[in-house]
Length: 480
Image (cartoon, rainbow, N blue to C red; front, top):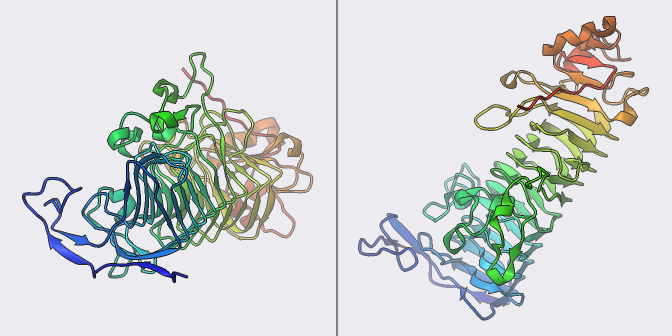
């Protein structure tokens, strides 16, 4: 519903030629663009309070000019009274709501439709404790149609707005509260690109924050569906650390030396966080490239090409948290990461229908992955996978590395959960030497293992012709 009693509107959009004498994108259309598109804009700048509630805004945003958006908190500092609530933003040429250099503001219960570029945008990386809650962002256009979905060229952030990675919600920093939002039919649902701009903030905050090492705010209950690329999405490395952003320093990090991975005594500086109750469906990907100390808690991922897409991670700094916990995954591939310094834990999680678990995804492809021999541990997992294809598999690009194992209390596996009865671990067929252990009493090729009602060919396919073992498998890692 975009109807509101109060309407803020303007003349129809007009395209203007660039001005060869103009040098500032804040002031006019520079010739870094062929043309700029002019609409209305609203802004509160460097003081006071801005509150817009239950208003419809249309024909807004000025493509090609900076700071000219539909609703814009611009370097307001700490502003707990700043509020955008219940508004409808429609037909924008450059983004919807922008939170820039502002802290403690509230953006909630707004609706965005036909907004080009990022519908919600958190700009410089110093923004902290803003509440982005219960908003709906819908793109009504097909990505492969004449409008290119809701992408727009000519802004100051191609990742957020153009066909590179346009998103319903784009943020440079994770230290805000993102709760209960819903995005549909964008190129990406939520893009947290904390590694952008050198991962050190931008503009006045450049060199004042370490955006991909910042702690997380509350991130819970968001739904992303029907996106051309990712639903939930963290790009580049995201590894939260125990650092402090100070409001009296405009959200800058008090001590940048604490953004490192380890203390002087070698202990891990990671700050574990749970991203809770997200729902992702009908996307191509869900997840991130590199991320550590981040748990998917009660995550529901259904009918995505990749239910999880994850390239590399680490063991949790607390020594016990699971990477996936209390989730539900069905109808898609689980592209699981390298985990060089600990096991990848999957706890109290339900797998159903057609699911395949890909070991060691993307390891040693480009710059991702380290040792390419992760261990995936199932802890009280419910397994109701019904496909006749591969349930787990290994890939050639990283030496067929990876192992799947049951947790120690479940190793006896008398009921045949996940693996055939009596077996508790799986490695690829590359490690055929395991079959000879104990005279063949410990491990066997998958095709030689019997499961009632399943043919030997189906067992072989289910476990990717791998090696099943009655003892838990672990890698020996030697660091020099």
